[in-house]
Image (cartoon, rainbow, N blue to C red; front, side, top):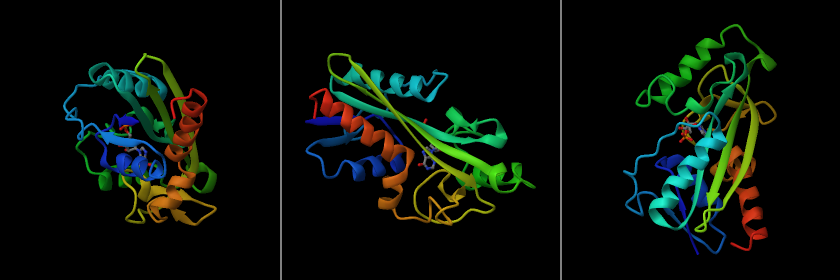
Length: 199
Ligand code: IMP
């Protein structure tokens, strides 16, 4: 059994490989498949729509089972931004050091619950017969006052978990996978694929 993960994001790929480690499936990336240059038009208005677009595009060119994730950070004080534009926020090539500091600056003067935010992950799986299965996972947190930690990727250094007193860049990859938006969405996806008799 092979599943292609439709992402070019190394951080996501690392997490998904780790979560799927124990399962009897071969997980390949777009790079492994030589599909990294396939153009995907992320024109959806929601995480779910974009996840479906990504999975369908790669399913059409490969004919294999494909899982795609569309995820991002939603900051309540910024009306849910950067949201579905998380990767493109302030420019796709802008460093996360800059993006993270920018968000911290936007929240100046806000305390506690006023800094609430969540990571959201929508996952879509397209089966070879075209059937689409979707799941979603979220994790609640707050925007930290400074960047902390070296683990993870993207916005992890500013995603503070009040109950742990740490950011998602300060906890271990295993711990993050147990509680993260992506971990939750993938666990639900497993359950659905088992119900479907795919796994
Ligand atoms: P996508 O590849 O279009 O789904 O964009 C996802 C973007 O959301 C990433 O490039 C990050 O900016 C952000 N993001 C999603 N999940 C995480 C996470 O677990 N940690 C940090 N940033 C994340």
